[in-house]
Image (cartoon, rainbow, N blue to C red; front, side):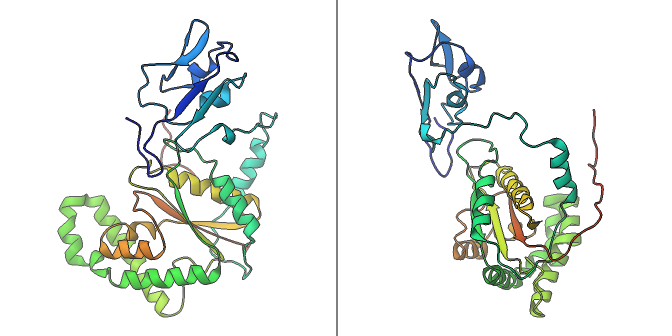
Length: 304
């Protein structure tokens, strides 16, 4: 049985041209599903595949003789392209320069982001690795300040009806079920965040998505790896930074719109196709401020 996603529930189909195959074994080496073996000096389909072809395309991409084609699971030979010859097209120092310079930007110039740049950002994000192909990441693009503001206003009206969710009686009731850390998170972050969003919006101040010129929501599906939308959002963030734009990750919106009938109606209004375990909003625009200093960051722990 194939691994299901919202896009397909079929297995990939591997085709091997024996007249071109030299039996080098690279395809069998990179196929971690054990779907290809070398037999009598030629590559052939194995009967001991674990999942059935997941459509990663590794075998097709590694074959030096172009003897392998993979189809199905949203992949085909037409998706192949030649890679540049440089092994390190970006130097580590250049990459670290961009990483160090980046800060979360919530102050934007009142200038639209060109569609050409948005298309480049999304193209870059689509190269992000996924747990299992094909990608089950879905994307909602709010490509104007007006759309971003309308979303925030609708979200705040939705939150007004959800305030019971952070009331003392409900949190006290739920603490034995979801534990101390969740209780502390709800009382110390989620409840203040909800109140801040709604009370500020009543005063005309948008602290949901800061009236950014663009907001992009990356989310998954019940089938997808929960890390996939986070990785895709990160790729989009870095692509935007490379294009001279400012960015900020927003994680507080996603959890509120996942459960219950009201959440479902909200998702339907914005054509958000699925609830998902993880998701992120990325706001983008031309930065209004410029930082002259960076701040060194670190992990909670690194154990060797």
